[in-house]
Image 1: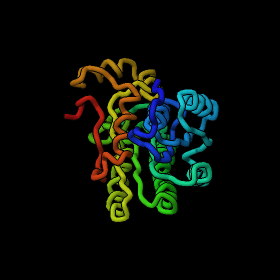
Image 2 (image 1 turned 60 degrees about the horizontal axis):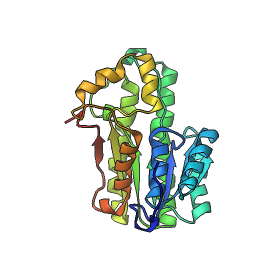
Image 3 (image 1 turned 90 degrees about the vertical axis):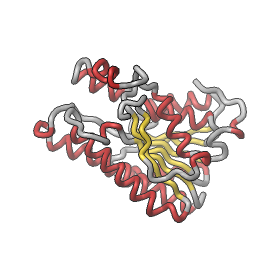
Length: 260
């Protein structure tokens, strides 16, 4: 875990950050990293026990963090979570829309309608609701800022195993690009990252449904391995930082070269 020596010189020094899906995986890694890089962080997810654990880890390392329970399928919950960060810290500078859900893999004609609707609600409508609230909060407080949406390399091509998931993530890419064009003139940058195979609970769940998934992925990755969640969080941190001040509207592959 990161420890904090001098947060005043970190990549996100002085910024207030909001992270969805922060209870585990990439979101939890982002919470630890953003705080170590100097941000005050509000963690949001559905599972309070996980949020509490990660928040305590951040604080133990010397960071500033709090959490709020948030359901991306509930518009009021999303708006309340973004309002909470402003109530706590007085402003919002950056946001990482990482939260997402999964459904069982399978071809297009075998996707259950309820699963499709659930993926739409959480993985597409959820980021849209969050972005809308985040832009309003940034405008009202910091004035300028940055947003990163977590997409997937599975959105960049045909995705026969996870067609609905890939479709929602591709739509997130489009929302990202549209928002970048819309809000760029007022100094709000919007980007996305597209992670490849990353060792999170999500990929382990897919592995249970599709045995051998990770072993099938590895030969397609030039770096020869899956990613650690912190490696994905590092890309998000850079895009949210002032060091990426001329980057907006991009979907950055963080995939070990898998789509090169």
